[in-house]
Image (cartoon, rainbow, N blue to C red):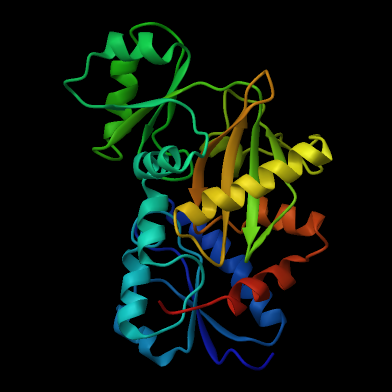
Length: 301
């Protein structure tokens, strides 16, 4: 396929999501090569970034810190190499769950109630304010790393200490128990919604990448009207952060049918368990077509 030049598929990296990124990148690389694109794997954990100067485009298949948080996007901006996905600011904000939620709250995008937790916090007061169960999360990690569900009074302190091993900024978040969903974004289009039905406690790292019994429903089971409304609001949530190109917006539903946006993923997974390829397939877009569509949206600035 002509028109792209030499493409670097950035994969691996130095984050806690390295192994997932290697799988995503391998799938993306194979898809590009099947279509005749001059694509090559590039692991920034093992090669100096100035080696990228020999490439015309960068397909970012990195997840987590140093790949999804604006750092790599900034390096590519300085090198003048067009890259896929969101820019520096949106990538940095999207990686930070606390600042994402602050922006969404200011813009009127619904998100579960939350509190920042520190070592000096009144843990009992936070438990009472948010109610039990609640979730505790490192603000700047992906793939559910460091997340735990607090079900019993007095459990917040231990959950905080676990999350703080991954990031000094930790948030506690109100539990919303009516179902987990995600909306893939491609350009200005919201893809069909996917409902996620994990067989363990919640959609954690194991459910995402290791288990084969996690159930994915697409069609989601929502009414056409409800799905269209949430897709529209997902685009608003995506654009509020300043995202572009492609991504994924996760949301929860409560038992009364009200939805709450959870987080945005600016460099979603592209493995055999991943959700954007699943949603794209439901929209009639094959994996290989999806990869090329994402690459066509590459930009600088």
